[in-house]
Length: 481
Image 1 (tube, helix red, strand yellow):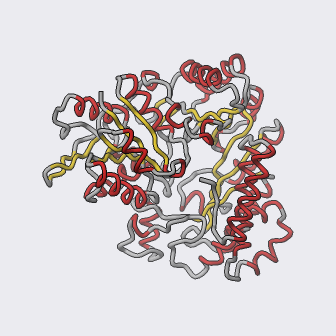
Image 2 (cartoon, rainbow, N blue to C red; image 1 turned 135 degrees about the horizontal axis):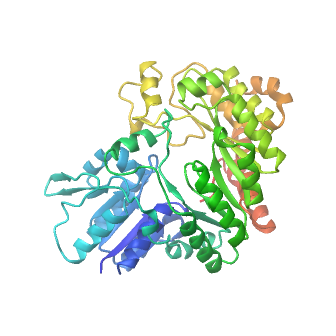
């Protein structure tokens, strides 16, 4: 058997890593998770585990921490480093970094299993599909393998390695997946690029059977009896109507805690909303993105009308199905008035919690290419040019961008109290302060407390800690790590 250490910075449950661990354990390999913010001495803890290989799951934005940490661990332990996740999938050139020995492109379950099997048997590892291997100053670039079409064939996600951290072991929300892939090609998202990677490699959009998902949830609720909600981390949970209705019937009969899922306004008929609510759904999350319909359809390539968004909201309110929305501010060519349209649309939809982020042009997406064409970002713009925190600043070079970033901080407040919009229009012309930053964190607190199923004492501690961090220490803290 081989020993592998999965390492990350934050106290955050990574469903993909937990699924890989489940498969590796099934084949008798030894796995452990180490999260820096949960350890007093990360290097020492990893060294005590004595792994054969170090593994990092990495998204763009955290790759710099990964590179630096991998370098320290590699220097101390003298073992190879594997990097997987979205960042190496879309930016495989990261393998050129001296601290990275191999990367996984795309799905990692069987690629990682093949790697550990060969390490255990001391066989050649340079020809494993999905992996790029750096050896003797040469990079072996292997093709991606056929996708796992039968998702039921994979084991249930293993949460044991994460549960050793108190904050995660006591999380009352169970994260589950039912699908892989997204059927849409929005211009700001990497899904279209991922589909290209897997072209000719099997069915890209796949779904577990309803029975398989229900069985996993039953196992989880038995193992974690304090859990009080299930959250589906699918890109779009409701896209297959026949699958959904069969699942809902089973869920109502066999599971007795509410669930949360993603939705899309043009899929949410009144019949579907009624079924979701009656069968156990507590909340749906919907992408509004922007209030200007023309920009949403032409620029973002998200073909959803304002009427469809308003109809979806009306159905949800009729059946008391809670709803949150996701929005972006600072889009290419967006004016302050365009952003106000987003606020007004969310207000008209009567959204309880409207969440907004500052748009970031992810390199390689169509909207990033468009931004280059319009000279809103430099020609040599790449992943290293991205801002480190997309809730503070934007990389776009347009005259009103500072006002849009400031408006982003007041987005939730303006949705709740649009009467203050004329005043906010003046405030956003001023430089941001500690108060602005704390003000923006309030909806995060609201979401954590109201939707995170936290107890009273935990909620009070969270509020006091956030006040201290943001107002007195001057640290912009959005999510507690």
